[in-house]
Length: 86
Image (cartoon, rainbow, N blue to C red; front, side, top):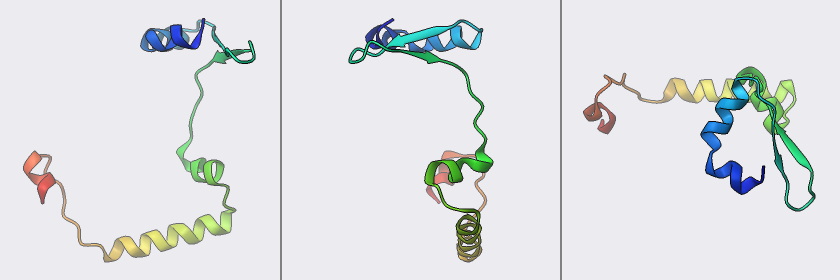
């Protein structure tokens, strides 16, 4: 199918892929088919994959964020719209 066809029924297409159906979208510029497949995303390594820091840089960033978070004034949200306004 074309990208335009896929865009018009994306929700249905994604459901079909999750049920195991092989679906491909044709790239109009190259004529190549791009396959849709479910993948697992692991949040533990997201920053490493997305931004490319080494382990040392990532640990340093986490320590800095945690240190800053300790100094933030926060209140527990009570689940209401009024609670969002503060």
